[in-house]
Structure formats: C-alpha cells, structure tokens
Length: 159
Ligand code: ZN
Image (cartoon, rainbow, N blue to C red; front, top):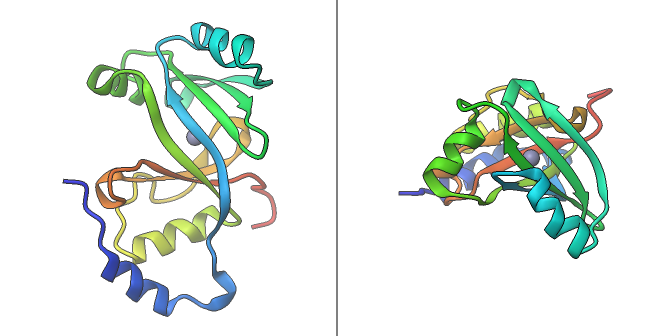
C-alpha cells in the first residue's frame, strides 16, 4: 500500500513559518531507469532531438547518468554500473521506465526536515551529493502515494 497521510501534512504545514513556504518551486528533472544509456540516447537525443547536457558516473549510487535538456527541466537516464546498485534492483523488480520525480528546492536539508515532520518516510535523512554536484534527498514512495520523490537543491553553496 502506498500511503499518504494528508492530516500529518496539514498539521506540519500549520507549524511551518510562511517564509519557508513553498518548499519547492517546480520540476528539476525526471529520472528514467534504463538498461543502457547508449541505447536510450538513440531515442531521446538522436531521434527526439533533446540536447545531451552532460554524462557522469556517480560511484556512490552505482549509476551512470546522462542528463538531457527538457527546456525548463532535465531528463536523467540512469543505468546501473554495479549489480548491487539501487537502479539494478529496480530494473529487476519493475523493468525500465519512469523512476523518480525530482522537485527543485532552495534548501534540501530544511525540505527533508519538514518532510519528516509531515510524517513522510525519508530514504535520506540528510542531503547527499547527486549527479551534477546537486544536494539531494529522496522520500519513500510508500509515504507519498507511490511516487519516489527527490528533493533537489541545485545551488548547494550558502545554505
Ligand atoms: Zn534524480
């Protein structure tokens, strides 16, 4: 069951100062789990014409990431580099497809704290480094109605 507790969210919101709202100002990127970045670049870059912004291996997550430009957001293609990578087990369970939705936040640490206070289950209790040097944290889909949500802070300086 993918549960969402609207009452816990409402009571956390009631305690949140106006100045800290909203936590997010929109879409940062969508993540797609793939067996092969190269195969998927044939589709998204070569056929559909999306511009490849950069490619990177994030060793800590066991993923190779290709980031494409969606206009006002990015598309992340995520290919496992090790058999014990979270993306490898995702592909085994669910097959390739839409993996997560990443929302842009000003302060990832604060957004995770507020999410925890709102009863959401955190995968990352503190921010960690994601692709592109972003500060990121994931919320568990069992507490968000079935969507793996990433909170993503692009500018990790000064917060
Ligand atoms: Zn992501």
